[in-house]
Length: 296
Image (cartoon, rainbow, N blue to C red):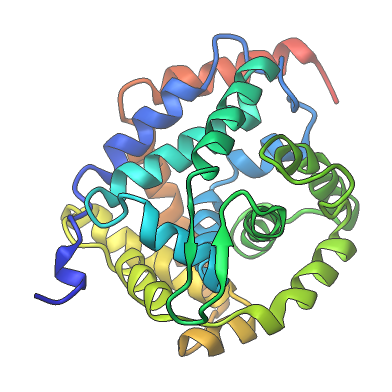
């Protein structure tokens, strides 16, 4: 049996992701670390967010120690959809939940990380998921991917908005274990950090295997599978050239027409997502909070 055949299929990807999102939105959003005036809310609500999510996983997986922790300690192969839904619920909770709820969620993640330790079989280096350096890499990939995906397939942030977004998101890094002051607080700092990490990155067997699964997950219904092809292409084309080279991916051509097609596919996916139980009500709670807050 090949290692890829050990994966469960992606049946229920939309349904479980939607349920995770709906359950993570509180009755009164806006009482947490972020709010209606934040760029973080805007990025999270952009149609390009699925591209950002997939791109961030592709980038995160290139750190061999971060990937080793996922490969050796998560239930990724047995329940890949469940892991994705849990990650989505956590990020949504941090962005929209009350501060105490967000801190509690982060505390649970830190507790789990304390038990995630081992040795990367390819580099022979020890790792610990609680290592601030690994946490910072995961954080940086997430934030950078949000900016890039919005620029290519959503509503592009201005330079000032990108700086504000990076600064806002430092709290997300700190509550999960990155020491205060270490997370980049501007786009320029984020770019410098990413560049400084490139010498440590590689595409190991676990990264290649898991990302091959994510780019073409089995078990999706026909409509979602067709849309996922566009999201996959968008995520790959949005990667920096050095990351595509590490994976051995060929850069798709992103013409104006192709970009429009991908944006249309993201709109269709959003409509499918919106039709899932609880999603419309959750978004209405966000919208009502934004209205109550008034103009930024």
